[in-house]
Length: 179
Image (cartoon, rainbow, N blue to C red; front, side):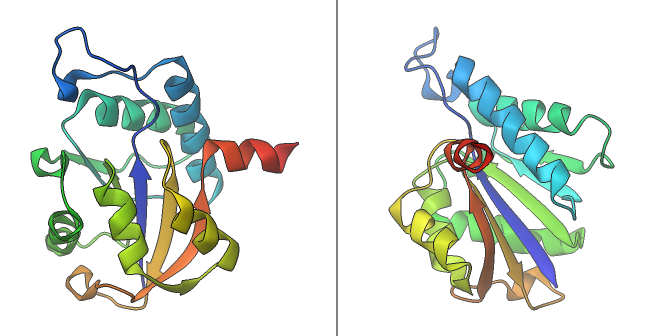
């Protein structure tokens, strides 16, 4: 069994001071949401053993804040920065997921961007949580997290419609659940 977690970066400022999209930083809500998702991940084992993160500032900050929220409750995963995840299409992201076979983690977290992350989550989902699937069909908002299991021992076998969506959570859904 392999578990894949797809996390879209948290909410960002509209424009970066440099004018470059890759330099956009998280805004105040983004900081809170990234920490909330990190806390959620730490509270729902198993934890990722490997994390692939886009080079964009907002993706890096999302991971840093999520990791900090885990605050020693879990073993620190191996983290790799992957330039190709910035602006990646679903097949490019899937390619990097399959390359994870070289390190053979049982649980993998990818921190990236829409539309690629949303499209990939939809394409990989073949079955699973009906409510989560319904929410995921609508959108993968900032700090949205899709958790899928694949009945395989090899990341190279991960393919479209083979995933079982265990859960799809967003900061908004988490806040609604705690009310």
